[in-house]
Length: 413
Length: 169
Ligand SMILES: Cc1cc2nc3c(=O)[nH]c(=O)nc-3n(C[C@H](O)[C@H](O)[C@H](O)COP(=O)(O)O)c2cc1C
Ligand code: SF4
Ligand code: FES
Image (tube, rainbow over all chains, first blue to last red; front, side, top):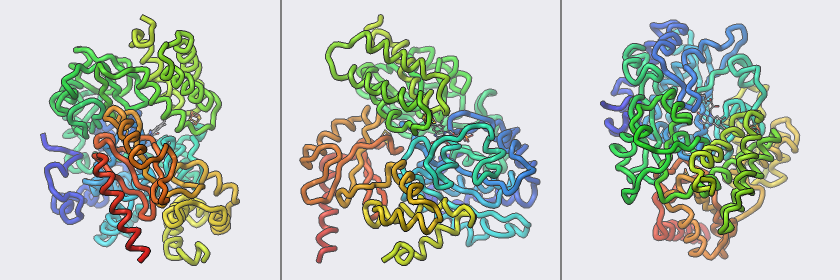
């Protein structure tokens, strides 16, 4: 099957305006603005079964329909913060097929009646943001952004905004705080962004990959998209495959593909032909899955990964082979979360600090102390359900599942 | 020269992105300008930005303190920020980091004798499939260097040194 999102793999120079346009680019945006009411666009996306690709898998059309129509103006924000360890798909989209993303963002803006949209990029994506500013200018010149588009009353402007190094800004309310010029710390909810988001106004936030699906859905229709994937998850997903595989990289596969296909057919198998020991399907935030034949051969969608005791998240699949020590894996994820905890709530701030200390101690001595393992597990479990945002919870996933599912590595078997 | 004079065009362009009553949103883009140009954010710059955006100096300082890409301390002209996070480490990033430190005769966070390069380790940069990798933060903003070897690091260092020699002449 040819690609739907990573189309640049078949079409050279797709990142150029003229090439994108020649290959049917912007016809979906024009169709939406000139032939469809905003609510029809939202309905089409709703019927397509598209779910958000940023992690939670929330139905996209439904999210758009929740925007408060009594308060104006509305904003749309693209989440291009991409900072989950092991995730590098939005980067490839923005580098190689940026106009399809921007077109999707434009269609979403039309659907919810926003005249201004922002792309919030992680600060490290400096070069991508510079290129995107030029791409936006090209769209303006061609009459695809600006006032009275396609002879209608609809106007739209898109602006980029660079973050400056903080994983928490991928969390949508922290992102909004950051975009307002503040420290990126999550907000209390309610109110939800659909009611009070950016500058206190109703706001829709979606992931880059989510938006990039939209032009093809509008072009080819909801039924076409729904025909791909599984009943639980329609369409295609980009898997960022990393860790101990021969060919790490992004692979766009329909939902319903298996980890075996991803790792062996696309990823070229495991380095040094070792066996897969464990899979982290959602980056450092992931529960650790014990890899066995059943897991490797189960068709993947959100529901299927749940049955494996994990979440699919943004589908950043980290592969661990039998040479990898899980105590070391946990020390890496904890170092990350201790560094990235925003410090707003005590359980997460203190919990990540202590878990990181204990895990460092476990790494240093030659003899693993059972009290340390108990303490680590205890701290992790005490944090669960008590943190203000999901980061706190994420920090405990690898710890708890690592110790419980691989007890022999922690002297507990 | 004041920031306002030095970057009048850029600041005007940045402010045009946000509603006039929310010009505070411009704080991060303006900080990026200063960081790129001066290699760190001084107290004077923070004062000026605060005045420009009608916020307090403390508010600017708290933003600077929160985000890792704003540097409060001066360091080498270029920062070599090597990713040693889990996916990269599964592909040899910890060893690469040690090799670089040995090669440049520095420890984590230290600067080479000539003041050119500060070596630091950082968290995931969304380049995990191209490990070992690092980002360069310096006068040209931020650039990625991927599929790294010590030989390729040397080539990069040579190019920086040539650039330096050219500028001094
Ligand atoms: C700690 C944390 C980090 C997150 N990082 C990202 C991110 O980098 N990119 C992203 O799109 N969503 C991220 N999310 C999810 C967002 O909060 C939000 O659910 C998502 O952007 C919604 O878009 P979607 O519906 O298209 O998935 C993160 C969530 C949390 C709790
Ligand atoms: S859970 Fe952690 S990251 Fe989230 S608000 Fe609390 S301290 Fe901040
Ligand atoms: S872990 Fe190094 S770039 Fe992702």
